Image (cartoon, rainbow, N blue to C red; front, side, top):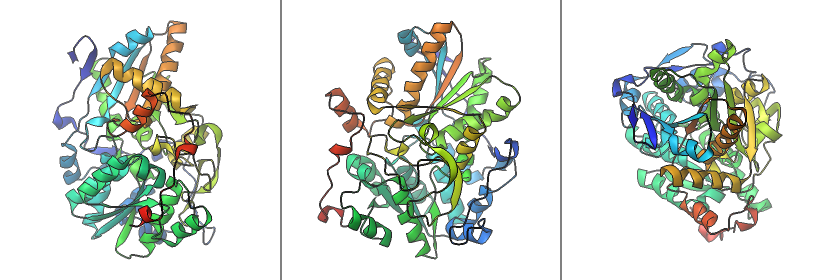
Length: 452
């Protein structure tokens, strides 16, 4: 353990990268509801799933195998940045005056700057192994698109990315990164799909959403027999791949003789919370006093303001119907700067544990989130992505409650990605121009700018 006076840091040797992913489904209080085929109203068939997803990933989606071996090629690729450090935010503790210890799992060390590469490498590997030549995906702020772009280049695959239109223009540097890795990136809604053209005809200034991007991606997959959909947060298999985070965290906490009292992560769909916290869910079910807390944007908060019911993953209702917490697949979130959290619903596994009372949730307005992220950066030098700053904002509330009660708790949050490509948003905050809802600031580009 390294101690600089400002932070304590726990690193694992490279041979401690997990060799298996953890599948939480066998340990849940009950099984998730079936996915529903919209065309029949019946549970989806394996053939349905395998036309949409790579066969191996379709199998992982419903697997009851508790431990899934990580392919050696994927594990070797993980060595680009894993294991990731566990860092104690000593200066943050001092600033808050809390008796609690605050630790963060620093996932921003990956080449693309976020946790997303954990699943991107796995999905690209299986697609290549199963003979596919092209993946199609959606991305919000661009962290997932960046990760999958690199993974596809490393595995020798083509990639088409539909990027939420508001982020396509707010966050051009992530788009440039995807294009540098070789991906084709289109704004969503776009004028290159039937669904996108329909949306633009009804509302030319539509800011897009993850749901519109998923609909366009699904349309392209069905139009290309060799293509398959790649999912960056919603699917069971995606959360499965990210459990390397929580497994490493467990070992790092054991080295210092601590167990977590609070596990905190931001949630859009739930990939970083799932990978971070699900490996501890069995402990909680067996009586451990662990609070798992999801931090959402107030402008798009399905866990806080939504309801648990059957809904579609995409705006067009062409993908499978799922049971989860949702604001409705036709909900269009305002274009806040945490683009990765602008999704109408959360992953089915995250929705289920919320429904079963195993997950708490809180929502914050954008200005409070950037205030928390800026404070953290000024204390530690790490500039969090707006998504990660939601978790930091929640940490402040929890730490303050520990101060009030005198509790010497262990608070751990997932620092899911850096904000070095979000400096335009921080510039707005620093200039006093950032508002809780930025809808009026989204200027629709000309149709010429949308030609792709």
